[in-house]
Image (cartoon, rainbow, N blue to C red; front, top):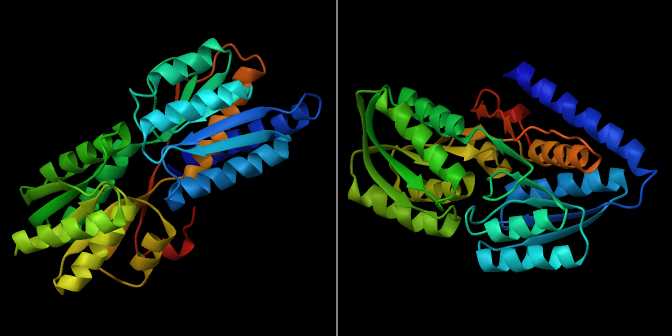
Length: 305
């Protein structure tokens, strides 16, 4: 996996180095980026990486926040097309719901790349984490930490493909342990405050609960507060690699593991795919999967997005 990550980083660096050279001889590129939400450090880090890359390219950037409202995201894309963007990077709040906007961008001659979650319609390339692997690794870690026995709950999220894949991976991992029983699964909507209330209910309803898996770190921080408030010995794993999750793992809390993604690399590689297509490449990969990595107390101090 390390070799794969090194190759991925090298491809990204080479592509952006070439892009910087070519961009000086061209008119300024216009890049549009629509996020499903910006109230999340994961997506904030993506925006930072996009701004850094755009600055190196001499490109202009328009960024919008859909706030998980697909109607707003569609309107935002329509507005970007009116502004004459060359490249659209879409992080869909609803993969099916955004299809019409993707089609409109394609029809206007705009290169479309989806990141983190894929979008329906004529997307030129999709760059996203191996979300099934992330869910699998986190729940395998949780089951092993419980000694292969005990009751486990899953804190689900918004039904987009990455979240569904994480839950699928988690279920498959837990199914490999005969002594593990999934006793509850509820939706925390990947939101700290909602997850807090949901986790409190889970903990109260299941006096023998030994572990909880959260589909993201934002929700996991709400779960952690519920666990600490209960005074019970319940273990927590999650997906993302957010700074506050990594800090919680380092201080030895109930939060024992997060399977980290690499949001900055997703943007860099997604933009590299778009630039290759924009500059005349006939073929770019339809999908570029990005590796994930287990972060626990052993390596948390050395990890960051």
